[in-house]
Each structure stands twice: as structure tokens, then as C-alpha cells.
Length: 347
Image (tube, rainbow, N blue to C red; front, side, top):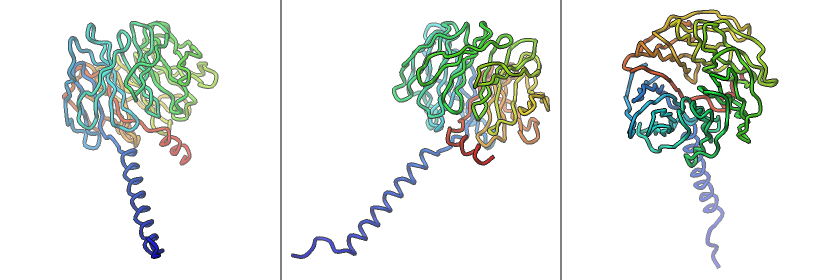
């Protein structure tokens, strides 16, 4: 009886199968590593989309909102495919809108607590933490189902939230409690409360997850530095008047702090906790975000209706982008946990 396949035919078939698997794997990796080069600027009722390669405003998105709109926060998923927008508007507000980054269309609306302000996404992209300012809670959204899976009591008037790059903890700045709630992301339970200076309004964690920086929105001009291992304040950094938005370079060596009433951005050397430069920007800078390559910082200027672009190598403003309308937040695709691990290994 003649064999169905001889050795040569079998080898050829295996080569074709292997090639197909390699092509499929390469395609899957390309999707997983797809980069979103946009900065998303929230303007109360619209979102400005800026191409960070050219600093050109490429689109203005008006999400369909029934009733009053008060868009405040934005967070981009680690894969760059979605943007989660908080709508604190009364009545039909208290929602999070899911914006498809490829089409600039809203694909889902999620009901959360009252007065959602800012949000943050875990490095694996599986959860979104949303602070509800008038409920004194944080909502946890499962991104697979776009549904709230937990509601966590925190302090009084929570305004900001961030997730550590290692994904272990979420940190909530409670403005009227003058403290920071530390949430274990595995259990979604508050495991510590850290007192800070006065009116904490912004929070960010170092790339190695060892330090937490908190901007205290007051005339005391202080950024508190929390040791993440002990959950205690280990240093205070004097910056400009009414410090607000914070952002760190990917290597963690520079901290940029938007000083709201000073109209400046302080550049802090994190090895010494000292200000090394002060950069004039627009009126009432509120938030900041940095590109994945760490080369540019984008700062929203609430009452200039524009965005300042800072070159990290020179610590100077290299562009001012108009077209915004009382911009509150700017969000850029973050580095993934794997990216940060590779950065640490390369240092």
C-alpha cells in the first residue's frame, strides 16, 4: 500500500505550518506592541487629540452625552487602544466614557459614583480606578466587561488616583482629609492611610514603585515624598505656589510639578529632592503627562486655553498648542510593566 505522505511532503507541510505560526505570532506581537502617539486633552465637553510626533491638533472629539457634561479625567490603556474619560456632570453625569482610540468614538458608558474626577489604569490594563469626589469612594472597573466590580471607601473629597508601576497598589489623594489612601489592588481594600501636608490634589509613583509623590495644593508649596515600603512621609520638596499636576521621567530621575498659581513648572532632581529649574508656562497649569520615550512633557494651562510642550533635555517650552477650551487633563499612553522592567534592567 502506498503511503499517504512521504518524508519530503511531510517536511514541506511542517515548514508551511511553522511559517504560518510565525506569521501569526508576529502579527499578534505587532498588535500588542502598537503605539498610540496621541495626547488626549480634556476640555469639559470635548477632547482634543494631539499628535505628539508633530505637536499638531488632529481632532476634536465631542462625546455624545445626554444632559450636563463635565469631562475631567482621562487615562489611556497600556495597549493604547482605549481612553477612559470621567464625566462628573450632574444629573446624567457620574459616568466613565470609553473612547476607542482608533475611531475617536465612544463605545461604552459606565455608571460610577458621584462626582468622578480622575482615573488611573493598572499596568496590565485589567482595572480602572476612579475617584468619586462627593461620595468619598473609589470605583473599580473591570475593563473586560466595562462594569464596576468594587466600590472602596476612602477619605474626604478624593481628587486624584494613580497605580504603582508594579501594579500592587493604588494611591488616592483625599483633599479634605489631608491624607493618601493606599489600596491593595489584589483585594481592593485600603491597607494604609498616610497623612501629608495640606490639600493633596495630585499623586504619582516612581517607576520602581518605591516612592510616592503627592502635590499639596496650598500656599505652603510642598510636594510630599512617601516611602512606599513603610507608608510614611520621608521628605518634603519646596516647589511653586499651589502645586498641582505631577509627572516623572521614565527613569524616575526628574519630577515635573505644575504650579497652578505660579504659572510655572518646577523640575525636581529626585536623587536630591531639590528644584533644578523653573519653567514658565501658561495661566493656571493643572496637569502634566510625558511621552513614552521621556522626551516631552505636555502641560494643560486651564486659563490660557492651551497646552505647553516642554523638552526634557533642555527643560524649556518648545511649543504651545492652542485649540483647547479650559483644558483640565492631558493623558498619554503609559509604559507597560514590561517596558519599565526593561528600562530598569538597562540602567
